Amino acid sequence: MTFPKDFMWGGATAANQIEGAWNIGGKGMTITDAATAGTVSEPRYITYKTEDGEPGKTTIFNQLPKGAKRAVIDGYYYPSHEGIDFYNRYKEDIKLFAEMGFKIFRMSISWSRIFPKGIEEKPNQEGLDFYRKVFEELKKYDIEPLVTLFHYDMPVYLEDELGGWSNRELIDLFEKYSEVVFKEYKGLVKYWLTFNEINSSLLMRTFIPNYPNEMVCKAMQILHNQFVASARAVRIAHEVDSNMVVGAMLGGVCNYPLTCNPDDVLYCQKHWQEDCYYCMDTMARGEYPYYAQRLWKEYDMVLDTEEQDFIDLKEGKVDMITFSYYSSGCVTKDESAEKAKGNFTSGAKNPYLKYSEWGWSIDAQGLRYILNELYGRYQLPLMVVENGLGAIDKLEEDNTIHDPYRIEYTKEHIKAMNDAIEDGVNLIAYTYWGCIDLVSASTGEMKKRYGFIYVDRNNDGSGTLKRYKKDSFDWYKNVIKSNGEEL
Ligand code: BG6
Image 1 (tube, rainbow, N blue to C red):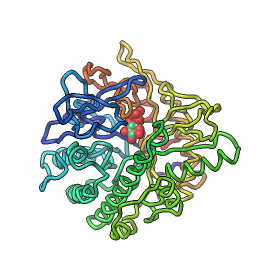
Image 2 (image 1 turned 180 degrees about the vertical axis):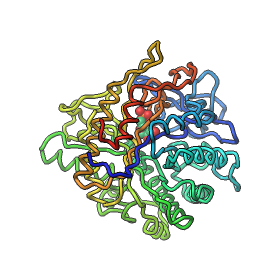
Image 3 (image 1 turned 90 degrees about the horizontal axis):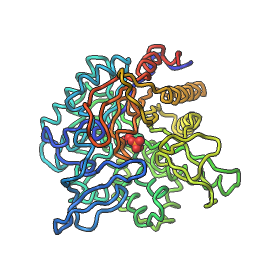
Image 4 (image 1 turned 45 degrees about the horizontal axis):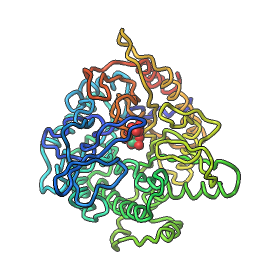
């Protein structure tokens, strides 16, 4: 195996999926705090109150009725409220990460712990203190934090009162938030990511049937505002500390043409441009790519921009590219082809691949493919910051958990990373997603477990929250110890 000596092995999480303590320590409510738990077949809902105070719910991919505001309503269960209680158990969890030999740990800061509504003059000291304690605990074990500034948990005030990322005001508010945390954690945090899976808003059009054109236009405006906010954050990080490394984070949508019919091949190329490169080209090269004009024309989009935006984009190019990778998808013009699911990949089912219990394809070679694609295009250091298998695990009576399927999945993906490194790709880190069981983002379940560490918590919120090591815990520990030699 050819992993470089200083390769950073680790795990990844996000605040709203682990912390809990949703209204503790001065934290404001985020949009995730109004999201209920679903299952693979039952959707997650957002609960709200209408202008007249009537309670209601809609699925997480839908818009709220006009004038409605997200609300926590009696009788519903909200998994983010307790998460896996990382807020209180971070020391125990970090100790377990250290025992596995983690060199890096990806986590996110919840904006609303720092600015509860997002608009306050001064930051919330208790929130700042909490993350400082977590970073110091990581430092104790020489684990490098990798911190995402925005991992889907928007302060609810910004979404419901200010209209969310469609509103340019958020650019300034995000700039302020990033400046505060960069200054606060200077010397403690070197690696930062601005927006988790920044391409996600545009990807909705590919997996929500009959997605309206106006929503695609809204997504492009949201993205523009996020690109500018991200660029400004990159610039500030470099001003605060020239050692800070700030990356873009992409939902790694790896698409293949379903057939060699040129219609499918061209359609697939279009997907790569719109699903991945539209975002990465802009963030890594500092300007919109050539095909952006075609895309805007296709949807009759007129972007709301200011001259300074384009200067910001140029001055705030990212230092590295990071992405999530779970599965690949197939693209075809043939509407009768059998459909498949995936993490933002939709489209047709690949007859050469197996699928997980949640219907996501299992395709380690796709990881080698996307690594080469991204490195070939940008020649920037890469990190795989999410990858893993969500599966049903069984806690045995003797408190063991046997998860050979997870070991198998991870082993194959590590081999694929090794192949990519041999291809010449500059891959510097791997943070396995959900290294400790956490709340699933898409379904809100606990049953979809990714972790090397089992958390005794069930879909309905029952369970002791006790942590147990799965078989994969010792396996991953040995992978790290041998720097990928022993799989
Ligand atoms: C990514 C997100 O899309 O996929 C994570 O960044 C999420 O937050 C992960 O948890 C896996 O998806 P899920 O739905 O299985 O939790």
